[in-house]
Image 1 (cartoon, rainbow, N blue to C red):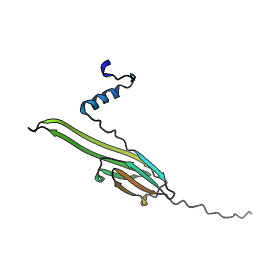
Image 2 (image 1 turned 90 degrees about the horizontal axis):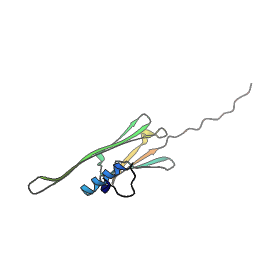
Image 3 (image 1 turned 135 degrees about the vertical axis):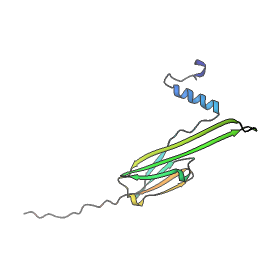
Image 4 (image 1 turned 45 degrees about the horizontal axis):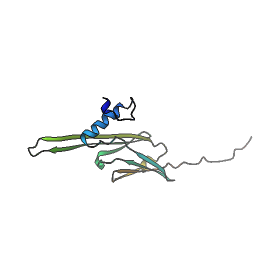
Length: 141
């Protein structure tokens, strides 16, 4: 076991040892399932950008449940490599899914729009118009 353990690792890093062996054996690493999301405040609206590389537009679903926006995406892929006789030399199957939810209680849900281009989902979230409380003078009796 000592020969497989790179220097500088601690005993709690066992998962990464096996991950590195897998990476070395197959020649590449599988992407980590993350859905990186940036949110900007642009005055009248929020703009959310979620990275979903490798997904098609049809793989992505946007749902509103109460005061939450839920982004979910799911896809499958096959990478078959066969020799001349049709036998597998290497066959890999991948499955990716993401699910994130965001509080949109300050957003006008009717005005939300989304666009997916080049692996990035861009969602425009218009802010609710807050009405200022009416002011009036009360008469003292």
